[in-house]
Image (cartoon, rainbow, N blue to C red; front, side, top):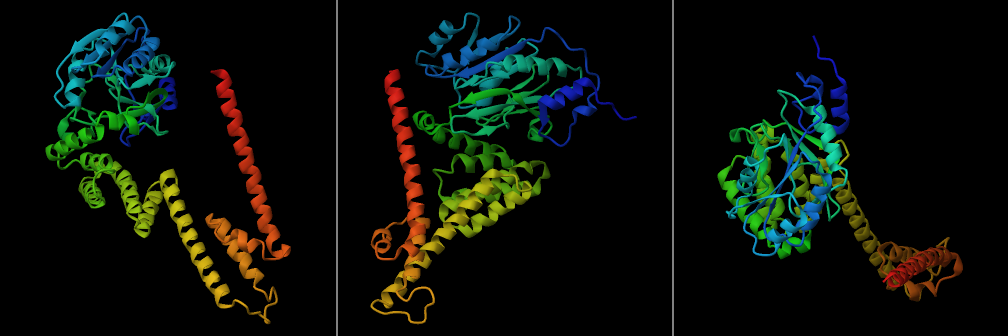
Length: 428
């Protein structure tokens, strides 16, 4: 007999979206009654985080109930981080350990000290939405079960404008989960299964804001160099895991040679091909391959890679669509420049002559008009002024109207900019 979908299943399906193919809330059994006393262990790992720790802790504290606890594990701060923690939150348990270049170790130390029903890891350069606690408690109340253990992936929004839901942070304390990996650590049960025995669900209702990976912060904390070094260790530790070769290629994209990035991506795709469990890395590897080929100027190959991504996503991947469109526009601009050069050579070779066979203009004004159109398309105005003054209105009016329209828009933008600056100055 098929399992019937319950109110709980409906609620969870509305608030949590599965990111695995092997699990369905409609098949959940033994759901216990909703508890009214759900308690969370909020856990923060930090080191020299004096610039962000107050923002992080304040956002957590606003979401906490009297039943919850806050644990902060400091891994060796030499700035004012610990003093700010003690000042910011009245009830906080501060743990201290030494830093050993192993993020999973730090998380697992803190995890062992958690005493509440569920844990919620928040990094020190992150902060919560004001409604996260309420949303999460409602979800967990509906998900209380004797046999069901899963990980909730919040929705992350970072300062670069990226939105992602691929990192698990929330899970039951007694679920035998632990963190694995020195960098870009993930939640696991059996390490030999590479994390594929852990069920993940994403929540759009729990939002984490993040700025630790913007360019300025990355450079200040030398995070890129650190990430690459630790990822190289992970590749050595788990050479069969496509996760590490992909992440090494991604994090080393700006510092490795294009050949090194390509080699890592090809290795990733080979590992995926050998182990179907890892197929999720095929898409992201293809996108990264397209980006490195585009960076190298190998646009034809890049185009093929991004077209593969669109096929894999049924035409929905916006990044692939973006790059494909940019490549097409660049090709059009190259063609426009080629046309303009060809027409300029034609005019030069027919200087001081008249085309008695032309039904449009014996003085080649129609050719000059096309050159001006090419100038507008490519934003190369080198020939605009000398040519536009030499040809009659019937050939130049359309181009002049386009220039006037663009000038009006530019003036409007300049005016809006001045108004904004004036408002800012008045408010100071």
